[in-house]
Length: 115
Image (cartoon, rainbow, N blue to C red; front, side, top):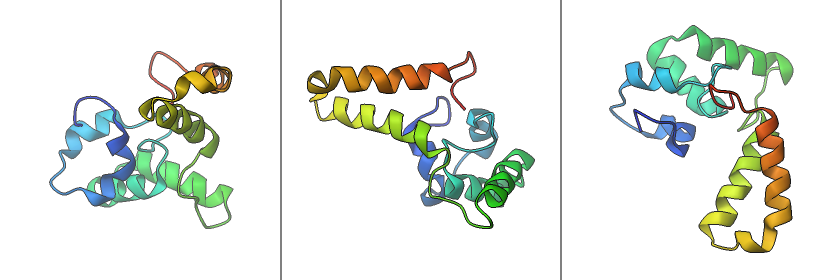
């Protein structure tokens, strides 16, 4: 978990004894940890990282003082649904929909990832 991005980055607030120096290297460009305001807020509390603060403040402004559980929701949902279909081993029934989801994701993909 400390070396490559995994879905665990979405739930950092529930994990003890994290190596924050390594985890900060996996932070998304927008300052979040896998689009999770709660995970990012926990990282801010542990590290005082200004990129975390910037992400959270942008969300607070965007949502008039509140934040959704995931932002941006659209990117997260596209990736999450493809992951679920593949893990359930039913992706063959949704090839067209998966292609549409992945086309959406690839529009935002860079050499540094999707964040």
